[in-house]
View 1 (cartoon, rainbow, N blue to C red):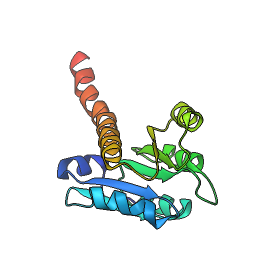
View 2 (view 1 turned 135 degrees about the horizontal axis):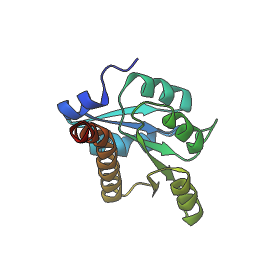
View 3 (view 1 turned 60 degrees about the vertical axis):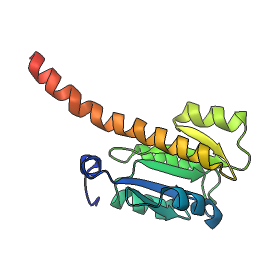
View 4 (view 1 turned 135 degrees about the vertical axis):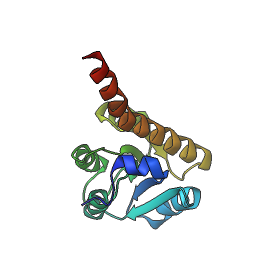
Length: 151
């Protein structure tokens, strides 16, 4: 069970990121760039651990390695879609090419980043992904009072 709602995360300004990769060197840049008091970075080396963390924590952004062994980023995306207030998915790969980028965006990922990470690109992508997630969470809350006033 999640420890608090997505709205609680917005009120307390806590931003949770989940880094999913079997390679520790993929987690280090994410922790180094976002591991401060406002950003909470969780790490998982496989899909089953990532699923458990998503069940326990309101997560806004998932940074996920393309090949997870077993499984892929598509399996992660399928699980994310089943989560209430689903996080935004950023796919990462050493072989991030136009084919992967097109496939990922067409299937619903937010972005694709190549590895090793460029700090500026990682920061930009995660911040924009979080802003997108936040707008998606806030929109239903803003629409409801307007709909009530119209009735």
